[in-house]
Image 1 (spheres, rainbow, N blue to C red):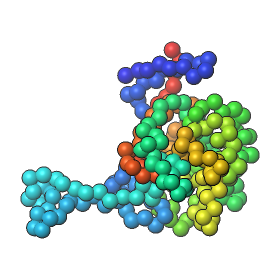
Image 2 (tube, rainbow, N blue to C red):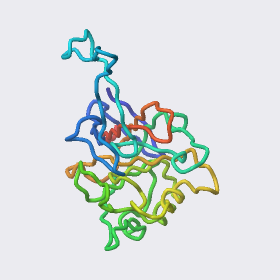
Image 3 (tube, one colour):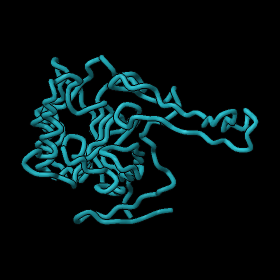
Image 4 (cartoon, rainbow, N blue to C red):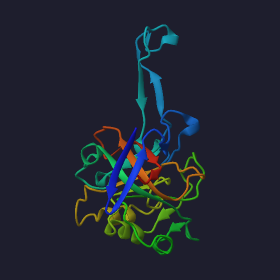
Length: 243
């Protein structure tokens, strides 16, 4: 299936059959990253007395329950409800998104911080409503207690002011693992608490394979309909061509 669309003066064509999945798989340990000391995803049969919801255990059906934490078990998308007392739900904020995305690869500095100056040296103009920044990191891995790279608040503020509505990264957070609850990068991107910016989302723990080249893509961001500040999501990138 092919679609055509325009962005400003430019026209693009996308083949939706050739997407690149940049997401982790919940419940598959070898493809599941971890963070925040969360327990691994549990997918196990329901037990009710002597009855076990598994065909292998003699039941006529497989009847499994799933236990997970969106923030710590894999690719997820979150809204401002992640840091606000009002607890806005990603299900109400973003049922999904399709549009242009720019993928950029940046390394952190000596303080393990991805800086605005380095981004501006690489990207002079942003016209895409979605941006992905891939930072060198093994995938999958358990980021818990490793103090992974993070993003300078000034960079996140710049992206908001430049019109980025959907930010995606392979890191477990845009902020440091330990910052005494400052969450400065989250707050800068959502302009919190000055305003409740329901238009912007952050997707973390995505997976951008090393062979995936920098540049423009068509993004299909799919978010599970979960009434929570964050939900598991699928990041699909499609190559662009001109009609």
